Length: 233
Length: 217
Image (cartoon, rainbow over all chains, first blue to last red; front, side, top):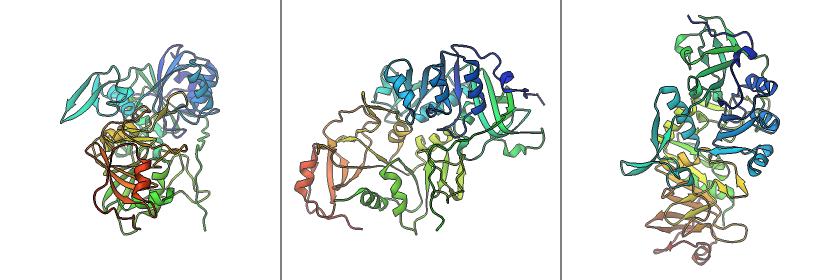
């Protein structure tokens, strides 16, 4: 077994510096690496490029980094629900690259898999396709999209072990499972770090080979963005 | 004329037994309320769930179980969770049978615009571009005209496009239309709406052939 466990979030972020490109898992506020984000706020690392499906809300998730002007560029598919984001984008303080969600996921997956580029029909004939190489396959036009290159990937899982194996819960798997192993260094934070041997190998979602550092997060707020319920009667 | 629930109710008639269906945000979400109970189907949400159920009972909501609109949901027996790349494999790979989404504009050649109003609303396309580029069967739920009374069924979209030549069918508050041969072909009229009213509300080329029945529920 190869040990990936680090003692603290500050050790997990060792080597993180200004100007780096980071991947952050999560969909909305579901499955975001809360502890790593808090630590980045504390470190004050700046001019970072974030690859993340969304940009958090005003006072949680990546919204916290936006608020401190630590982000130079966002690469996302959907950035509603965040007024500060909109303000910085419209004023030109923040660079934003909006790309289709499936293309975002596959560009992570390609980086994880060592595939330099791939063709997808998403965005052909729209402004997303401007300046990109296109090609016809089976009578349909496709765009050439490239794998991401990132310094760190920060992912969040439900359970993990010190070998770096990860298990997710519900829809919190989302981009986390695609980003693990897609950057030079993958940091996994988990709600529960269990002893090696206690996870069933058949149940692992992300094998430990894709993870370089793992730690148990101190606390998880797990905020709900849209609480929708029905009455019991 | 139909209201939003009427549009959803008519679209629900298009859902066939054994379908995997992706519902967009807004009117499409309402379709789930009107599907016949004897039909077997599963709803896919692109954030990574197949077999989506109704909203949870108060107190049962789980922050780890949401839909693409970030709403708390439940799952039904037979449901599964998966990562975002797998989710779009289902969409791009055409394993999802029907996509229902909203639109700001549709053109007579099937182009759709629904993600951006330059200078006013730039929230992003989310999964819409992947969905419209790959789905075989796309139904658009929309209002026929905007608040100023101008047609949203156009010769050419003015807003930035989400996808090209992809919309097959439209259910609006006024009519059901098929997008074919660079035209909107009128199939059904909403209750109490005349062909003349539909003509006046449609800027793109409208085909009216024979007797046009009223929508039946």
